[in-house]
Image (cartoon, rainbow, N blue to C red; front, side, top):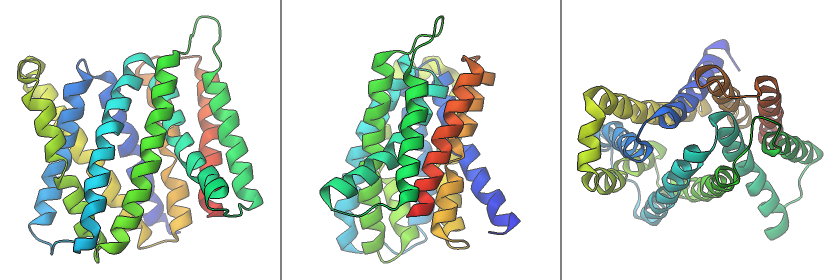
Length: 279
């Protein structure tokens, strides 16, 4: 992997962690998530207007992914309402590949190489460290459960999008319409919370929209990098977002214990990387 591609992937990882930090730090996370969804629509619609539509076979997966994203946003909101960024993000991001790998093994009979099992063990150990309470720093059960629920939705939409993008004929068209479809989420969330949206002020609204554009750009950068380097390497490096999120949590929000959180996030990151490389 060249230095340029490495920089692209690390930038995508940083941007993904950043928009999660924006949600965590928002006074009204529900409205902020609505603005994030609307921010996805902006680049999505721009691309959709300039690209051919995806193949009809892919539309059921766009619908399914959009519905799953409803659950994703809802659970993410609950998780960040009661849990720390440096706990919720690593659990949500780490448990998703773990769930996919275990499901493939149990339900589909796929044999997992030793490297994948090592990754599963590392993720499990890291999550255990994050979930274990220490004096003065309680870990809220609601936040953890919501984080695991978020991981389930991440695994679900990853599978849906993985199948959908392959049947779309053109990956960028699929992504464009997937982002555009989030207008439904944005309209429902924001139209039913007009007063709360007005109370946020113009600056917070612009931050939310910028967060959505940032999230969409992060996905696009990761996809672009996959055209330039091996998929496993890109996917593995992309998960350095877990470390970025942990750093945001302990530095930006003052979460702790710092050393324990950073070590646990590092272990989770290593586990995700191993599973990605094993694939």
